[in-house]
Length: 340
Image (cartoon, rainbow, N blue to C red):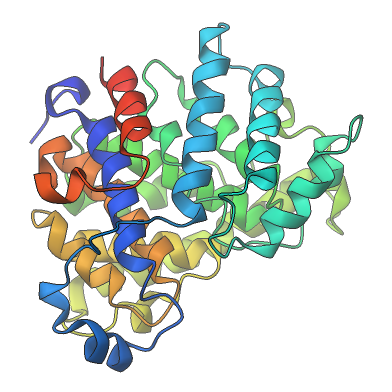
């Protein structure tokens, strides 16, 4: 299948899918699979809560989406043009009364530092953190039309680095945006993991000074190439595990057992992808599988939803689900902008 992005409304499908996965997984996060099954019934029948509230995952995705809209309205997407609105959006989110959805410590710590006038963003970046908080929000970069590969990769890593500066967080964000982009353009899911592994090998020692500046000097690494290779190597390791899991894992077992619980960036990418790849043509089943997991269920399900929606488009999701998702208006507005 190859479809144009606009024809299937991939951006709308991806953003809505991300939020639906988030809302489905939000009540199950921090719970064991047996407890989830006791509380919510068989996983294949899980329903979206009537009040479909999302977590900070969707809130920060929208913050990135707004920053991207602002930056691209001003011209060619470039580091300084993105950094300013992105920083403002992240600080606005940090100070918002709606920021009450159990946000991650890394985002809170970094945003408190980003708030300080005159502080270089590299000095706010948490270079020791590879939590999943950066790649669960990066999907918009796979959906904005007209970006070059260099812009998409650079911006994906920059948006991660403002909070999560660990090289694995950078690489996982880059890979997540690339996966969303490939699926939106009609890449067959069967070949997706192989393409992502090739992409990781090709970029393994490429440190983009234009987008990252001297971020690497905040680490203990002897060179920028050494710094960034650490991240790609951890992602390559999990992608190899993912490739094996797609072939061998039963859909009835907790996907976290194969590719990790998703609290860290590379595991969230792999387990979100695994849930999607187990059910590439059953997007709702993929979300339900992702929400019924022992790990970071809302982040895993939001990534699964972003992948499934990019692949299947806006019609992937039941109307009665889409109609009651929190932030629906803003999700649809951004989706329509990038699908146009």
